[in-house]
Length: 127
Image (cartoon, rainbow, N blue to C red; front, top):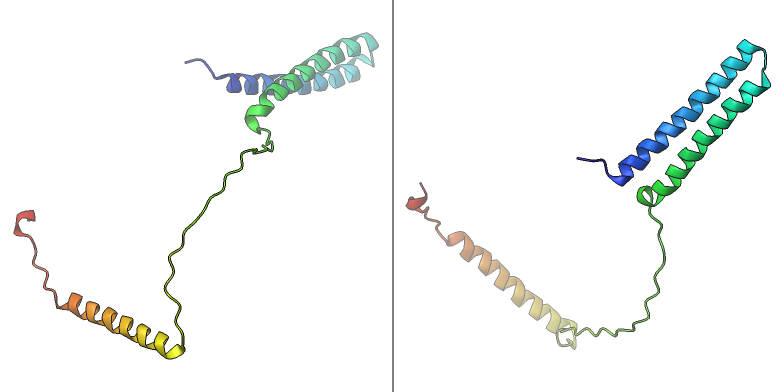
């Protein structure tokens, strides 16, 4: 299976980056060995600059896949959304609220007691 375009670009970028670094080290070593020959240094520098340019070119092509650009989008459509809320009727005083709340609490407690009284019989067909 062939590499994806992103993997190919990443590989080429790393190859040329490493090649530029290697050429730089070679230039330094040769200059030390040859006593500073300008013609050799110019040729090596040219190769190093080409490799660096290729790495930068690959990186710029790869950038949209590595970190996509975020852009703002203007929404021109105006939609009105309406919500309906069903709320309980207003209670006039605290005593009425207390009466209603106590009635609901008694109902909840009764439902809990009834649930405890239910006997669960295991289904013999699941054995």
